[in-house]
Length: 57
Length: 164
Image 1 (cartoon, rainbow over the protein chains, first blue to last red):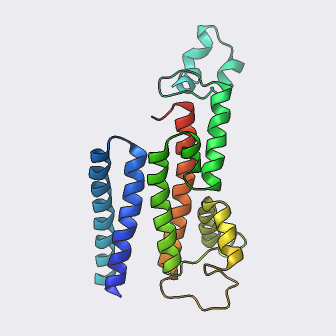
Image 2: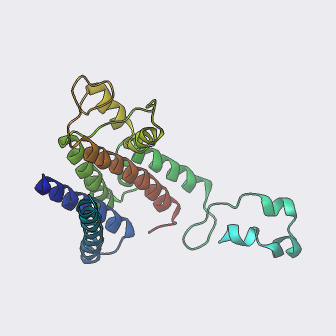
Image 3: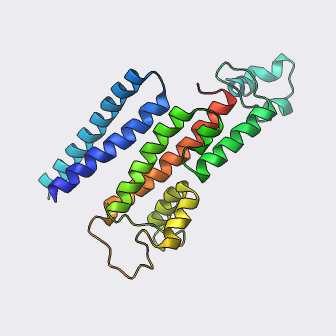
C-alpha cells in the first residue's frame, strides 16, 4: 500500500513537474533541470503532508 | 500593461475620455504591441483544438516539440488515473466538490465524454464498487483535465505572441 502511494507520488510529480517545466520554456537542459526541481518540490511536499497525516492519525 | 495604463487615474486627463478609459483594453503581445484580429482568431482556434485533442493546438501552431511534451504529461496523468481506477465525476453530482471535480475533468474535452460513454472509468452509475485507489485516480484525472486547460491557454498565448 505504501509502495503504491510512493509510486503514485513519483509519477504525479514527474508528470506535473515536466508539464510546468515545458510550459516555462527554454532549452532541453533547462527543461530537465526544472522538471527535477519542480518534481522534487512536489514529491517533498506530498511526503511531508503524508507523514504529518500518518503521524497525527 | 495597456490595461493598467488605461485604468490609471491620469488616463482621462491625457486627452482620452472616461468612456474610452473604461473600455476593455485590446490583447497585447509580450512586446506590448496590440494583437491583430487574425492572430486572435488563430489563437482561439489553437485553444479550441488544444481542448478537443491534447497537443493539437500546439501542432496547429507548428510547435510540435512543445505540444508533444506537454501532451505526453497530460496523457501520462490520464493513463495513470485510468489504470488505478480513477473516478470520472458527473456534472450533475449532488456534492458541490464532486461537481468541481467534473469541471476539472471536463478539461479533457471530448475524451471526458468518450471515457464516460465507453465506461472506461468509474462513475456514479458504474455497477462496480469503487476501488480503494479511485480517489487518488480521480486526482490524476482532474489534474490531466486542468493541465489541458492550461495547454489551451498556452496555445492561445503562443498564437498572439504573449509567450514565446
